[in-house]
Length: 200
View (tube, rainbow, N blue to C red):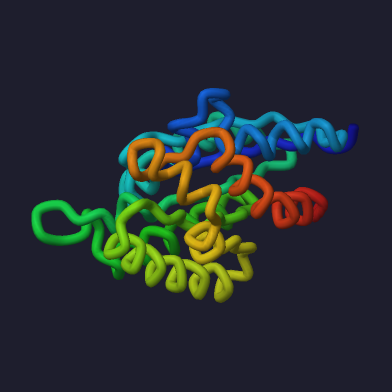
């Protein structure tokens, strides 16, 4: 075992693993793989259903600061966006410009605290119009992370073309997959996760 690595997974219901009967989601799968690889990992799942980028920003610093003490390798995995692009009352819950500003603020706060960040983009659901809005936000998020030199994992397009992911989403509540869907997502993120953890 090497450094004492602390990671907060912060985001929405997909981070929480809603729909997974194993209660692992993709975050739990990645954490388990890291432990199997010999990483001295303490992982905290801070996913909350229906939360937008604005909700994540509001709680981010207070929740992570308690879990990322000085003297440890302190890291954050961010993932959100599907709830931002959900239409309610005639428009998105969070407009794209505000979503972008919220992400930029989260990255700035992380830099101020010295927390290393990995960002996983938003996933597709069983709604073509919703997915089109999410794909546009995914591209915007990727640009912001690139400008800030933050690792960004775009999964939207690949999952949209994944028979397993889309089948699982449709078999569930139209948004959240079961275990096989989270297996697919975790495998997509895994090489980026391993590379990010290896950086000191």
